[in-house]
Length: 193
Image 1: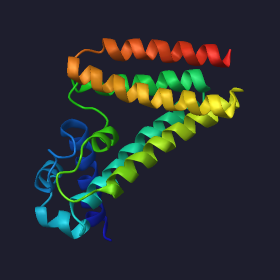
Image 2 (image 1 turned 180 degrees about the vertical axis):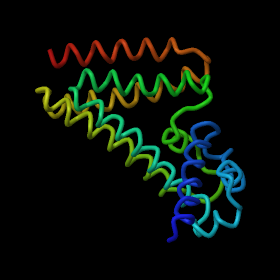
Image 3 (image 1 turned 90 degrees about the horizontal axis):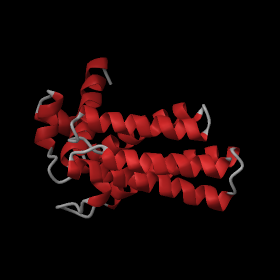
């Protein structure tokens, strides 16, 4: 693949992730993704012969990896600092986008596809959520939390962050996110002593 072809492919995946975060799964079409990426529509089908499903899976995987890398980076400073950093990252996304952007992974997890059954798309979203939980579990375990409790805290953290994003987008207000962040921070600080 030439550098130019690779750039086109990367732009399409990035555009798909951006559009999923802003508009959701069903409002994101191949045509609009190509337009957002400033690429010819034919390039989309060249790079993604399986169509929208293939592009969405790659976009979810990319978005999940980016957020996961941020989580990894923040967790290097310990669970409490890592959680604060992860929350700050999502808080900035909400504020910078004026509450128009959410989580592209959540977008595909909560919408029923309009076309064919997209189990592969849901599997990609589930894999991202499991990855984030796994990173949190490892950090919590390193801080002495039991495996069962680490799993419960990790699930609670991921679900709480995703839910707070939804509340903020609906209310166009950061207050729900800040309340959830404070409670999660207090919970983790108390758990790890």
